[in-house]
Image (cartoon, rainbow, N blue to C red):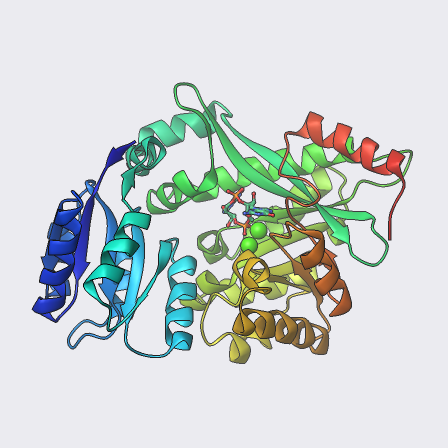
Length: 397
Ligand code: C2E
Ligand code: CA
Ligand code: CA
């Protein structure tokens, strides 16, 4: 770990100077700007902490967050504002949905001593993993293409538990890359590049083929295998032939359509509705189950939700993990469960890590839970072992 730089974005030059002085007094290099339009020039890999004013004329803090998301910024972000906490909470959620890392917030006005103390607690570190991830973003198309062709992309499986019965009723397949030099890589470091290079379709078909082939090995004691949930990029739904190809793949592996869940990320669906709704409707007509993933992180969700023929609503882990600390997240979880049920959907909570979270979800009538409390995503052989151990232990409802 090495110390990184701070970047302050605030339209008030005095605030920038104050923070720079405080940072430098404790030995952290700091740059400031009053104009967010300069951001792309100022943001290099040395910046590991950004202090961002939410209220600025011109480009406001929310727009800056979007830009940082687009730039795939890996720095930690501290939101500053004199406005009420709810606005900061909402901005924090947006940042999470954009894949940004929020390190906290600073309520204005602040005193110099408070500021110094805050900075001491947030000394920016350039972690080696952050540096690694920066390198991963630039995977070249030919490297990705070769990895697809060499089957270096594999699936790990995470169980989904029926909260009432305690039984495993599904497995979500999550992509991993066995990179020959870098080791095991997670989707955040390659899905974006696959989408950008147009290789995501090829990648998606290979993994769907793999998942549908592998799911049979998870059948226990003569029971049919659990439902398999596959993540599909919204980009791939542009192809009107998608439903037919998908169903013939399922037939090839003799997996009934009703045992397959296709997960689509909500925010992406709203941004790219072109053929997506058409394709999703036809998938449903072919009895494939549909899940709206990361629910709550997109916009205009309520109005659109009724138009999407989904069978499952997945509450994003961001809300699940903060629901005990934060009223608005708790309400979001409760309302999503109610809304899903009103629309006749199954509601699944992801990112469940504690018994307390599970108990709360149970009380609110949530149907399924998925998260580290039960298991991380595991390679197929380990998932088989996990399943038999779970069954042997007996189901605790
Ligand atoms: P997602 O579909 O929302 O998947 C859930 C993510 O949360 C997974 O991360 C999973 O490992 C993680 N997770 C599960 N339980 C917990 C928990 O209790 N606590 C915490 N902190 N995290 C938990 P992962 O595997 O890194 O996947 C990230 C995202 O990449 C996925 O988010 C999905 O959007 C995308 N993705 C994964 N596999 C594929 C794929 O095959 N195709 C496409 N198009 N996208 C994929
Ligand atoms: Ca998913
Ligand atoms: Ca999710």
